[in-house]
Structure formats: structure tokens, C-alpha cells
Amino acid sequence: MKLISSTGPTLFRVVPLLPWVYRDQADFGRVNGAKGLARMLSPEEAGLARAQQRRYRRAQSPRIQDILRQAIEFKGRLAAAPGLTRDALAHEVGIDPSHLTRLLRLADLAPEIQGHILALPPTAGRGLLTERRLRAIARIADPGEQLHRFRQLLRTPLRAPASPLNFVHPQPQPCVARIGA
Image (cartoon, rainbow, N blue to C red; front, side):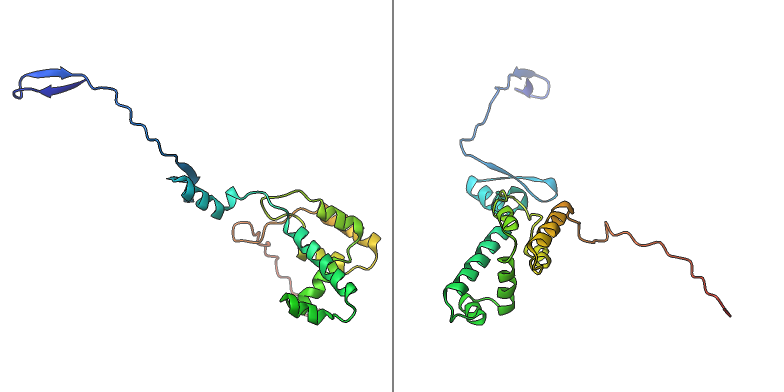
């Protein structure tokens, strides 16, 4: 109810307010923005915004699976063509020859390790197994030792990178000097 003057400041009449409800037929997509602020966007814009944000990333096959498949393919190409050298293959593919060598070492991993990598489920983020973490295992010639080191790798947790927030400074030790000893 709202009071509205009809003729002057002294006389008032009561005018009921109608319960108006505005409805919009357009669809909107809610996207979490910076600092926890929600943004209302059109569905197309919301889809583009979500594609750029890590929190909305869809689960994909781990990158190490693609790298291992590529390494196996390169090893097969080198075995199939006896005249093909590593340098020629690297230049043909467009990668550095040293990187090709690292990839070919991954193809020499034990079959159990390769099977485990190829059976990994899709993930939304970076997984535990990366090319860099598998390089040391790939250098080992013995498949049994490779498997042992791989199991150790699976048991070790990922560590957060050192940053000013989680870096613990060592306590200063007292300096003890012996004079005349």
C-alpha cells in the first residue's frame, strides 16, 4: 500500500500496489568470476568463459598417454625404415633431436608401466605421471628395477612448488668457532 496525495498535502488516498512480476524469456549462464563474484552472461558467452577457466575444465585423457603413443609410433617408424635416422625423423616431425631421444626412451619402459599409463582415467588437471617424472625411470635398462621405481613414484605425493606462503625458512644455527684449537 502506498499513500498518494490527491489534491494537496492534507488529503491522502490509499492506492494498492499490484504485485507485478517481470519474467525474462532469455536464458542466462552463471559463471564464477574473479574474487568469487558471479557473472550472468548469455549462454554462448558463458560457454566461452568456462572454456577459459580451469575450474570448468572437462576431464581429458592425461597428456602422458599422448606422449607415450607418440613415442611408440616414432619407435615403430624407425624400426620399419632402416635408412631413417633419428635426426631425419626429428626434422621431419619438427622437433628437436634431443627431445626425440627422450621420447624414444619412454617407448623402452617396461610393458606393465606402459599398460598402466595407457589405462589411466581422464583427468581435469595435471596428473601424477608426467614425462619429466618418468625420464629417470626410462633411463634404467632393467625392467624389474623400472617397475620398482615406478611403484615408488606412484606412492610419492605431488609437492606444492615453493612460494613465499609455504616456504619454511630454516632456523638459524648458532655459530660456534674454536679459537686456538
